Image (tube, rainbow over all chains, first blue to last red; front, side, top):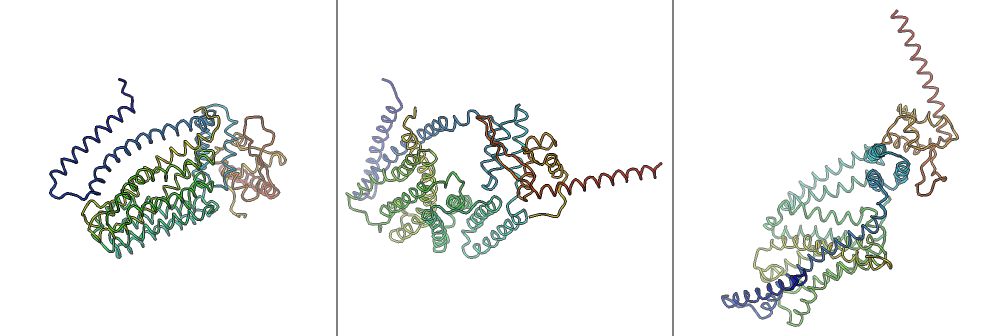
Length: 407
Length: 109
């Protein structure tokens, strides 16, 4: 019998399921307090489902990597094949130039095309790249220095103000202000025409970020002890993710905001995901009826797949390119993270006030645990899920869009 | 906007090189080789001169297939006036330097 990868996965899954059922039966038989029938069913079904999901994620990630690599080789690879390393280096530097200097980059690339000899080409490219990196800011160095000074002063002021009002949020406040300030300084240094081609998705994400900050402040003011669940590394991560979401919406690179379809699809998917989240977790702690548990079980398995996969696939197909699909995936993730985080904390607090349990309803723990859970799920697991499925969707959409794609 | 500050030696060299033939369009790498200036120095100079209206720039239209068009530069009316001014200043300073050298040489003798 040949042990193909699929057969091995199937057998392993069967073994895991049988082992879990036996283990759970033994655990139930020896338990002091028997769970309710619905809880028992959920506890029996969810771990095997998670195992299957884990297998699917790993194979989806592998598929995503393969599809992107194949797409890059077939499209970009053919475009780059005629360009040598100095050309690629200079092209990358030219692509990073602000719009008003785009012609300048094209001029340098055109000059490089005429230069013969490897060493002469490297000298020209390196010298030109140095020039692009030392490009003076549009308003001059004094304006940039002033902007940097304002940012540093803001960081210091906000750090001391937040430190006095909500001590547990000092690291977050300082880091978030620093990240946003860095975006502002970069915008001053390399100004581009301010465009908001997708106001609704932009407002949605920016509102999600603002709501995330607000609910974190409220959470920590109600329960200052919860600060122990937001250690400095977690606070920095929270700040980086929220600032990153803002960056995607208001100051993203050209390739991420070039069309309108991707951001709108991503924002719509995020709203659906938020609705799914409220439907799943926004109950009052009472166990829903049995048919609804089964329905939610199916939704639990398929909703994230559809929400992250479909926008990227549709945008990739409509835009006939991988880039269009990736735009939708990036916007989906950028909208889902702050929205779900902003919902998680208030819903978790309400749930905790009812029975003292965490949001998943299985653990009696301090309310602060919900803060750590929100970080792990909303800003850790969801984006990994989302990016993986989004890349697969984008690659498949772009692949289907090419009639004679040999792959 | 004009700055009254005196241009750098490299900027002066670029302006004077372009003034050698006022009607000819020159491209960047050509000026790099003629003046022995690195492109990382030359392109910011060309960019500043263009921003200040001293140079006009255009894309080369006579390009062989498969090659991107090059950016070409020549002096505008303001650029020509600057070139004349710089040439005069340079000549005067060179003469002053020569005279100074002669005087020093006579005094030293």
